[in-house]
Length: 157
Image (cartoon, rainbow, N blue to C red; front, top):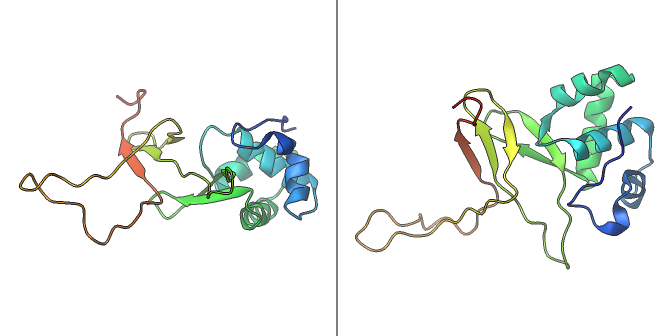
């Protein structure tokens, strides 16, 4: 059975996954609760296949897990990210702070083993080069909503 977790991203009044599900206007079913707890406990974004494999022993089929991932995403409890490989990954949604939109964070994909990690403590900024020292930032960029870094993790060297 999935263990109860508290996410550092969730506000203190919504630590309980059951409360978060109900506050989003959804029924708190066993499958929905298991999926949300699993996503909250994950160290990085998970694919539908990964969540299905990890929750399959609890008696939930792939279709049920996919439907719940979609419903939790639509309700704003889970975020869906695509990291360039045409596979959706799901992670706990960031909560708005003081009425502002939730902060996004970069992800790291290891080109050796494929591990995906959230880079919560990393800030990435796009700054134009000084005149005459290379190309400036393209004029079409107004804001950056997703950043994906690729490289090799410590295990793959």
